[in-house]
Amino acid sequence: MSDEPTVPVRCPECKTETRVALDEVADAIERHNANRHDGDEVAAVAPEVREHIAELAADDLGLTE
Ligand SMILES: [Zn+2]
Image (cartoon, rainbow, N blue to C red; front, side, top):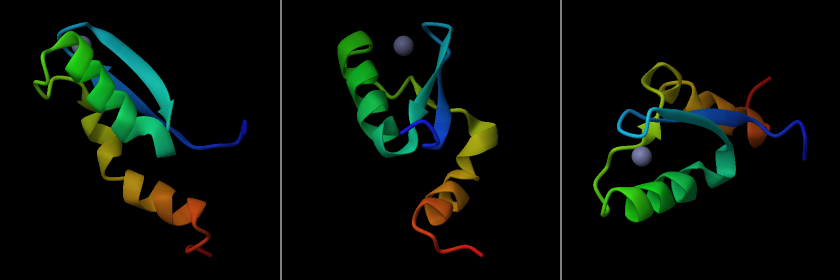
């Protein structure tokens, strides 16, 4: 789906930022950290959007007007 909300996942060690679909972001982070960083929590959702994820999820579920 092209209108799926995405969130930026940032990895300071790899110096990468990737937009990932909201419903895949947890898996993407886990996979990246497992593959690249021996399971350390290096990659994460960009801090400035982290607080909006709940809103995005709410929009996705049709909970907001
Ligand atoms: Zn990384």
